[in-house]
Image (cartoon, rainbow, N blue to C red; front, side, top):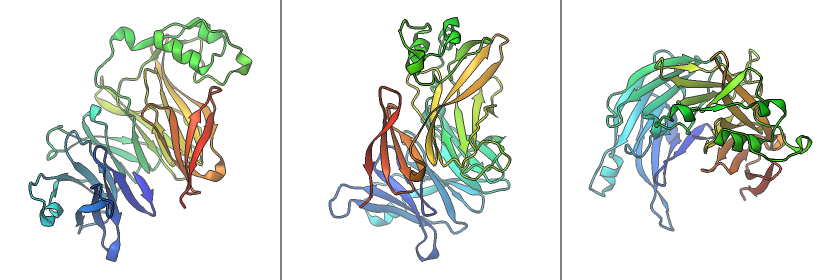
Length: 374
């Protein structure tokens, strides 16, 4: 969701369509715009309605494979699920009446700070963060938007302002012999470059590449003597961030993961050392990696890796490493995004500019293009 001036906009994933929140005449409205391709007025309003019970604060599109539907949260603790109803008529009256409220969720105590639908591979799940530091998870059958149930609530140690799903999860499970990768002794003795580790972990054995450790960047993960296997993540993961300063000295990023054995969501014991407000987080497409990578926007852009490591005693620990930091603090980066294949980074800053970053052969991100509004 893109925040602008206290109001929200969100683009659809399949069609060129987006929705906005407006406050014309002191009346909060939800407007849905569609792109018809005309030169004079390419965007036309196809639906406008207002909520008489409370101000709409957040919006989220559902996956178009299930249909055109969205969720909006109100300041009176309600979350309304709306669906576009099919209509054969092209009259303006029927277009304005084509969206219907199919279900209403009432939060127990506090209003929502963000709502996000999960990727379609995870099923139909709606994550809701509230001002009391909880994440509420609601689910519904894929073919029935009229029946939503609360699955679980998870507590996080700060007030979440934004939720981000990890899109790399796949419903198909890997075979047991392919879900773990052995940590070799050769990797423990000396630091290896990032590409060396990445290629070695893909095939399960180290490659025979000559290198000079003094001229190579920091690797994303340094194994210890007790580490035995690296687990390939296969379960749903959700990240929660906060753009408010840390009061208790703890980090402002929390990860929540689903454990099928217990059929519960649990926060991961990952220590995040950053104390600056976190404005955005973007997961990188995994693309056969055995670990997760994500970007954090907190004035600058920080690149992290997240490993799941199994030691000799059968205990799983999570290793979070900062491997790169780029962008100038004066740019005030508050929005980051990856392309579909994870080769380019797009960032937006307080200087009203959009920047394109690419990684060179020395594993440094270089600013290759800047778009500034005229």
